[in-house]
Length: 173
Image 1: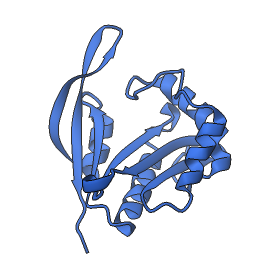
Image 2: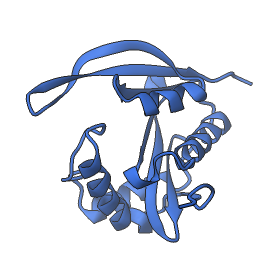
Image 3: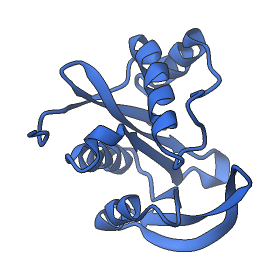
């Protein structure tokens, strides 16, 4: 099955709220790499819609969606820190398991990095399971480097799971 370049990347809009919440339940049930499981995130569609409305023209927060034939297959976000940390942003990304390896995660990352550069971010950080080799390789491909390991970051089924904190320094123009 050819999946490469079959996707489109767009900025999330308020009308994407319900589809995004459904997507988060799906990806949460497919992997233990996220901070939530199959329950998704505890937001009503109206709350998610309001959240996305605040991002529409924001230079501080963005969420991109990857779609194939209308199906939401991935998402990536960047959220600027407040105050004295304003030069920093927190990056997050997820992709449906069936679409791992198709290039959509790279395209989502490229969209986030372009937004970060256009809006004056100096540093991006991401937290990733220490054993998530595929994700770590993706982040390293774009220049992220490991800062440290956070022991027992997650506890799933009584098992402690370490996470790596990774950082990307963006050149200032």
